[in-house]
Image (tube, rainbow, N blue to C red; front, side, top):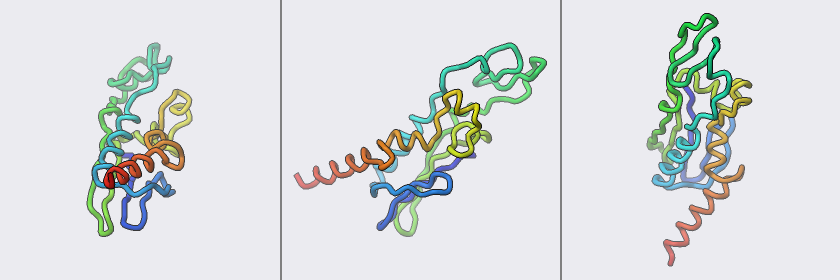
Length: 156
């Protein structure tokens, strides 16, 4: 299972991307929900099909599974796109969100540093890239702008 953790605390906020923590602007509870939902929607889509998804065997038919050398279904699909989710829980200093995929092979397809090279070559997006894309750039400036805008609106 693939799991990304986002911690929002009084004095600090970060996203656990594998072993590293990237600083992010502090978020409210609702903003964290929206952020995680947007990341999940961004990472779900499959890239275009390739010759690896069509006969002759061996090939992988999306939503069905892997057909081995003799054209026999040998591994069933766990339907990666339907296994994405997120959850939030309180912590001593704030709250924590987790973005996850319950498919056993999710990390090999969509986790930075674990993703198999052939999945990268076929256009599979990592969840870490989706986090950066949803937030803006590497400094997560778009998210910061949204938060600043909300704060400014409070004082109008």
